[in-house]
Amino acid sequence: MVMKHYPPEFKADAVALYESRPGATIKSVAADLGVNPETLRNGIRAAGAARPRGRRPEGPAVPESSLQAELAAARKKIRELEEERELLRKAAKYFAGGDALVNRFQFVCDHQRRYGVKRLCQVLGIARSSFYYWRRTAPDRAARRAADAQLAARIQTVHRESDGTYGVPRITAELREDGERVNHKRVARLMRTAGIAGTRLRRRHRTTVPDPAAAKAPDLIGRDFTATEPNTRYAGDITYLPLDGGKFLYLATVIDLASRRLAGWALADHMRTELVTDALDAAIRTRGSLAGAVMHSDHGAQYTSRAFAHACAKAGVRQSMSAVGSSADNALAESFNATFKRETLQGRKSWSSEREARLDAFRWLNRYNTRRRHSRLGQRSPIAYETALAATSTTLAQAA
Image (cartoon, rainbow, N blue to C red; front, side):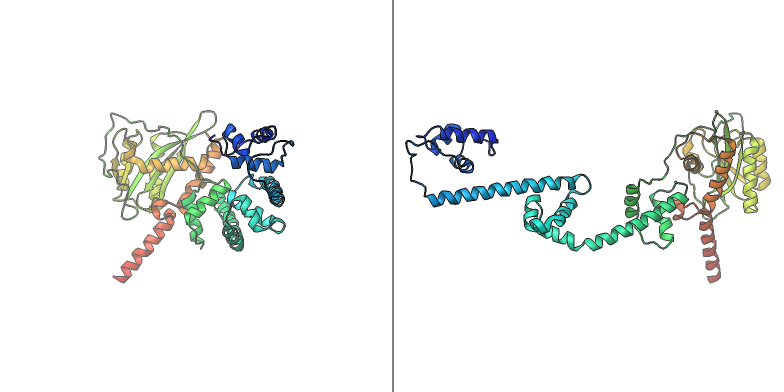
């Protein structure tokens, strides 16, 4: 037979067949059943089987002392199996969750005085050296767990202060700035454990309505959303803020391409041209002057209007426009809009009222400039980046 392990019923029947045939040998019965003679002999010994008196089996007689020794060995084996079964039954509750190997180590640690480390490791199939190493390093693990718990509390605080918007990179930067020497992988692990995550992207809604008859400005940016110094190149766009009941507010922005600073913005319940001119005026108040700067936008009717062109000319700003229907040509402003709504709505579909939307926008837009970390700026806020840039420029000028 191909089986190496036989069910108890088979073993019992094989022993009963041997007992019922006084004249047959173990070898002959094993041959009839197609099993190894030694397997049948072990089963007979384990069962303590005896055949009726009659014809003696073939082969030499087995000494009585040998039979007693085999019986004692069988009984010892049975006790060991019963003990093993009891140990596995007790260990089962340790394997309900968590790391399986650690659970085994813990079971050995809890029961070693009664059963011994060697026996427990044999039953559970683990190396004694591994258990001893685990026990020896327990204080270090406890210290790491305490440090993780402390760091997790700080992560919770940073995440809460960001209104639940920060993910792994920004939280890592915040912790490092506070003096914490931490790896982003550790932050990611603790955030997963605590169920903390940054906000995710939402689907875009189109607000750009081009005017085919309006005058167009050339593209002075060419998808290069960078600048060597602040107040030289800007990008602007309009995005909508959905309110309950199907109403909307509209936000116009003016963003510095060097520092990503929101230099100006305007919020209204309409998309008339004064929305974008108000945002431009706000940027002029922030910078003092925009003379010589480039203002890049899409082909929305507000940006192609005569009123906006006049406002740019009056401020000494050169207009730049992306290609019609190409969101990539004004990707920076659109990315800003997506981030704004993602981090203020946080999964909601709309604001409950105009007041709530205005207050959320006011808080986030100001926080964006002063506190929110930007990956493009080395995880610094736009104003912090401009401050550092100005300090570097002053140092270089003094050195020259």
